[in-house]
Figure 1 (cartoon, rainbow, N blue to C red):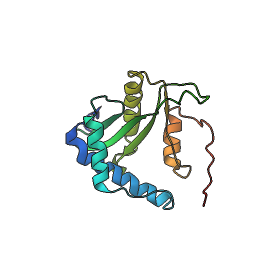
Figure 2: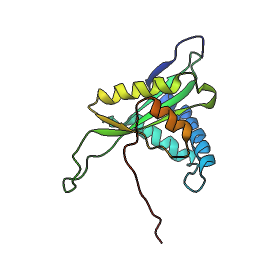
Figure 3: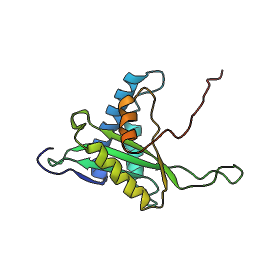
Figure 4: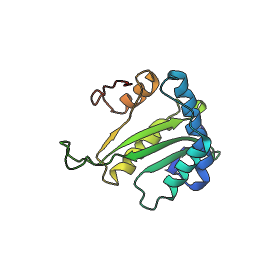
Length: 164
């Protein structure tokens, strides 16, 4: 990966197997952070998700991949649009989306995540999205550090409670 520049491009159906492996590897890493919150999704459900995303003619959401010089997909970023709040709620509608960045462990620290995130931001801006968020689990300090370095800041507090 050091020999030639990385290519960030829109994902294609031919990338589904790589996208699935990235999602499952990411799930495994998150499971290690907190098994009470995270799970390993079923492979066939992940395949269906990415096939649906990549064949959606409306193109509401996006997925970009980072391809190394050897053709291997080493990372991805999903841009998932938030729906506008219903008219009866007090929040003003603002075109926004959530980003999810995943980089294979052996490609971390090489600028792959930064290239993906910059491309995701351009993709979003080109589609009128004005605000991006990254839902990061507080124990995932590497992800918190990564997004913070790229200008993402604490955007509030989400409180929750389990009920019987």
